[in-house]
Length: 257
Ligand SMILES: NC(=O)c1ccc[n+]([C@@H]2O[C@H](COP(=O)([O-])OP(=O)(O)OC[C@H]3O[C@@H](n4cnc5c(N)ncnc54)[C@H](O)[C@@H]3O)[C@@H](O)[C@H]2O)c1
Image 1 (spheres, protein in one colour):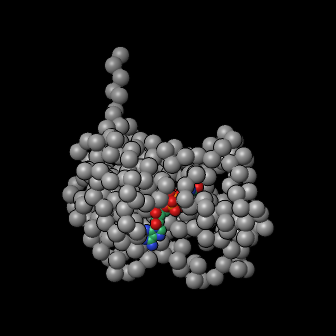
Image 2: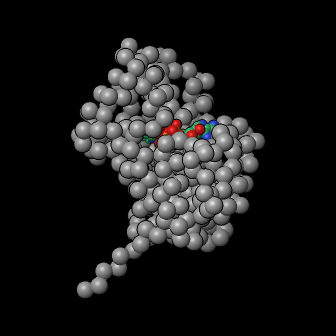
Image 3: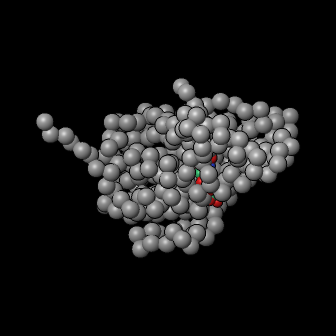
């Protein structure tokens, strides 16, 4: 019996990565490049020096600024992606009594509004170019369950899961797959912010929350950006050609559904 071992090779594929300077973004860029992809990456800040490569093109956009977001959507369409990794997001905390509308606007502005605008731009490009592409949205374990101190962020990630399902159903007739990755706790620069906020809101020592969440993962430790990047490669590739509308938990066993 012969086995059709569909490759994870991305040679000839154009992949876009947002949130490119973050821990998960950088690792995913490196993994896409290693699979032979042409990568177009974007973040608010200048490119992290360690990521430079001949097959990497970089652009700076502030997804919270309307003009910049409009330019970013045009850039996405000009890139004509086969793969769109919709990864940029911001985190903040506050209980329902404390978290205000300004914080809500910022979190929903990046994590939902810009997320959606870019998802739409990538979708339009794939439909216009009849590309049977792969869109990979970045959810979170926070999207599966509310948290007392993390109301807005949790709500934005629940929205990501919902948009993933709707977009997948809308784009399935075009052969475009849309999935999300739901990380648990991943050791990236975002955790410096998260840990500092938990120190403030729960009176913990700096570093304590990070240690605790790692120890409470069923597998016993925080994930690495590579854990997420490998799944992004899988979802981008032919290996995942029959998978759409799914949110894949990559969390060491944190979320049981
Ligand atoms: N690290 C974790 O434990 C974890 C867990 C679950 C989900 N996630 C999700 O994974 C994704 C990547 O997270 P990460 O841990 O690499 O975080 P990170 O903070 O290292 O990266 C996020 C990136 O988004 C960019 N960004 C933020 N605001 C922007 C704006 N206005 N315009 C353009 N870019 C902007 C940041 O500059 C940053 O480089 C996010 O969607 C995050 O919510 C992370």
